[in-house]
Figure 1 (cartoon, rainbow, N blue to C red):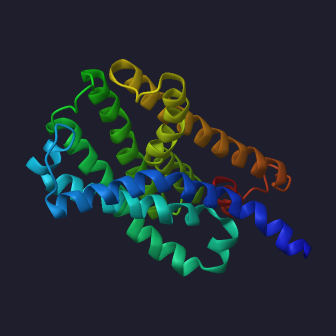
Figure 2: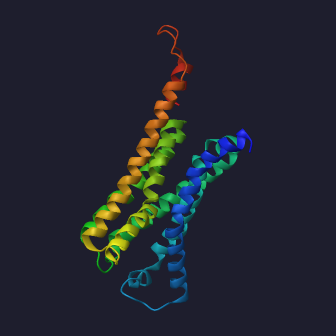
Figure 3: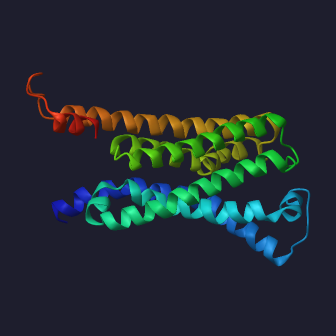
Length: 237
């Protein structure tokens, strides 16, 4: 295997892992949409979706597209080779992410809680759903200003929050193995909050590592009397 192939493999490990992490929530969402379309038997778990299907019909496809295509935006080599695709995908993914976040907030506010859930979970979902929407808006405004560094940072944060459902699945498996049942009540709320916090912590670590890497590889700064406008722009991007 050539050195180029070896170096390319690590760059694709992260997006591949993120896509795989999205598989369970994406499949679960698709099953729910099929259930709604087929008019399946109404149960206490799905009654709220049948009573008001539009928000969930908006949320699931937009969130699925955002989760599955989003990782490709974070591969530097892919961005360099296909800058046009990166821009076009961004114009699609930011509206999808916002639609998913806003639909999720609507469901959180107006859907009744599922059996076994507690009111605290509603508050947790509101906090992280709002944080995702704000991150995407800030990422969009940053790219409009040509502030590439802040654009990437906010988009990483927004995607990390959106990926919370995948991390929640990973955390729920040990609980299911140990207890023999799915988490409910306060345990479920704390598990979901922990999943989001883990993702946010990883996102901040990635952002800080990129900043540190740029500082290490940046050329030496010229003297104060020689620094021009171009030097300032180079440092801020």
